[in-house]
Image (tube, rainbow, N blue to C red; front, side, top):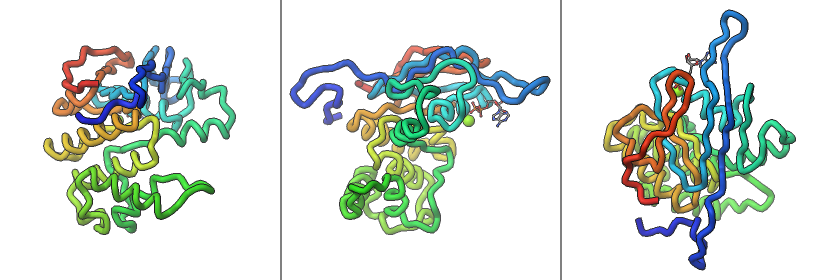
Length: 249
Ligand code: ADP
Ligand code: MG
C-alpha cells in the first residue's frame, strides 16, 4: 500500500495508537426470569485506531449483540464500555450523541435507500452542520465513489447495481463522514467471493488512510486475511486468535 498510516505523523514522528474501544468484563443477557439467556460473558476487548478486527463465531454466538453494544445502540447491562476514552454509561445524552457521531455501521444488507441515487445515498452519510458546504460534500462523495471503482455509477439507482457494488456504496456512505470507528456486521454475507473481497479490501485501505478502527463480524473464512487481528466468540466468551493475515499495518 502506498499510503502512510496516519499514526505516523506527517513529520514522521510515531505516536501510540489511541484506544478507540475498550470493553471490560461485559456481560449481556436477553430476557428475564426463566426466559433469561446469557449471550455474552466477561467480554474484554481493546480496539485501537488503525486496527481492523475480525470478529468470528458461529451463528447465534453474540456477534451482532456485541457490535450493537459497542456502537451504543444497546444499553450496557454489566461491565464497562469506553468509546474514545469516555465511559459510555457516564456520559450525558449530548456527549453520547457526539461519541455516536464518530461511529458508522455497515450492515449485512446494505440498507441503501432505493429512492435516492448512488451519490445521494453516500451524501446521506454526511452529518449536516452549520459549517456544511453541500458542494464540498458532493465532491468528497464523488471522489470516494471513484476510489471505490464506482465513478461511473454516481447517478445510478441502487437496484441497477450488483450486490457487491451496492455494498461498496454502503461502505462509501459509512466512510464519507470520516468516522473514527466502523462497525460492519457480516458485510459480505450476501456477496460472492470476489465482490466481498473487493469491497472489504477497499474498506480496509480507506480506513487505513483515515486511521479509522474497523470491527467486522463474519464467519466468512474467505476474508480472514483482511484483518489485522482476529477475535472469536464462542459460548459467550471472547478470545484473541493468532492472525495469519497479510495486512502490513
Ligand atoms: P450472531 O450475530 O453471532 O448470530 P446475535 O448477537 O444475533 O448472534 O444473537 C445471540 C443470541 O441472542 C442468539 O441466540 C439470538 O437468538 C439471541 N438474541 C438476539 N437478539 C435477541 C433479542 N432481541 N431477544 C432475544 N434474544 C435475542
Ligand atoms: Mg449477527
